[in-house]
Image (cartoon, rainbow, N blue to C red; front, side, top):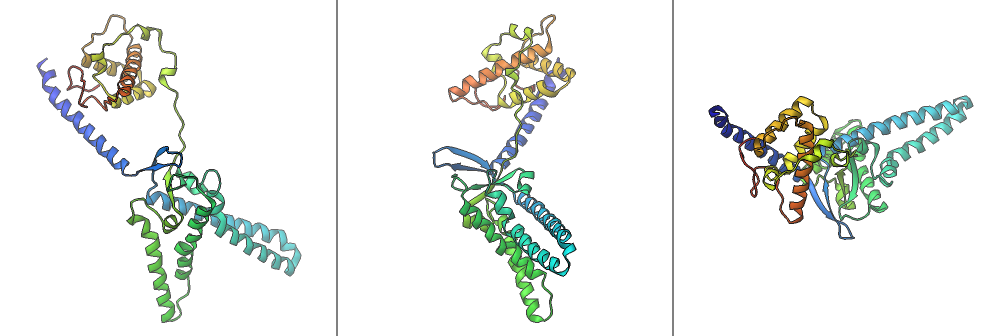
Length: 321
């Protein structure tokens, strides 16, 4: 009993340390969140894409562009190869048109669509949005993508030019400086905007596909779970964070882990395990009751983040669930 009491301060310090780490991580993620108000007055909290995510999406799209160009030119050349010199002339003209369209309208074609994202952006869970919270217009998409010609492709053409004299060397050096300014521009503004985004009034946000899990409370609980009644003091021992942890335990942990968690919860709220009591039924009943309690408190403006939050607290505060 003495050893158990002696470990309580250490357990509390460890739990507080984990809570501090979690709060710092939440603060770091909050720096990427921007509140946009739509014309209808609805507030949207959107997470902006990082510079590395945007660079990765562009490289994927650029690689896909190159592959499409190579494949298109190969197919056109194969189709007109049997026509001799005249066929090669037609193939060259068609290939030039295809290269022009893919280079200039690849990004526009995808971003002007319903998903507002190129294949590279979709692969990384990104999409383009209007910074004012309104609908993304065709003019904005055209403006941001035509600026890419000045930001990327024109400087690249200068970098690839052959240096024949001192003038060519200076032009190439200016191209390197030009490229550095535009490429590094997103690193020096808080919203990671390109120059094209500034002109078009757009922003790239992180919007990955989410698959909602089935709500635990919508599933039929064990019959034994309906026999439990918990007091307000027993339910106030935990907060929202512990509710999420308990949900993960119920979803994907082993029977042994469920039994240990059930024992720690009983120990914390001061409840003895009854004869023949099932740990899974106890956890399901406590989860449902705790969720209902927290939702009820939030209706009255009382939000309890975790068990260390100020407000109502359960017995034996030093232990973790």
